[in-house]
Image (cartoon, rainbow, N blue to C red; front, side, top):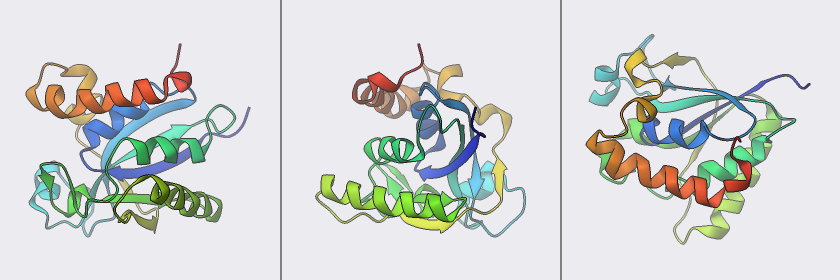
Length: 177
């Protein structure tokens, strides 16, 4: 069994990103949180103000013997719009930026390749940032498993659910049994 690895990804609202990765085979856990900011232990209110510098992100713990980092990146680029600068749909601000935070030089090279692959698919230029991973601050408890716990919430129905459906259709061979 391989060591569990970590991927840190920011693709807009972390509720969406978390819900997309949770059902993927080989994903051990997904935590919503904040990274790449100016303050320690930020709150949701601080991050949403846009003044803390943090991105809403997810920390994906995965078994690379089951699902590769490259595959996770392909899922990431297929389930958010990496051409939108500091926004995803109606969610706007630097906290909604698209970014890959690499944990090793190998991950950096995989991310560069994934960005190039994404550039072949999207009509507009990819604006996803590629940065070294920094401290990841878990979001408040009520943000964890948000979609699973709140499927009837209007944002979940209008924004999260369509992304989850898209991911499940496009990556159905990668879903947990």
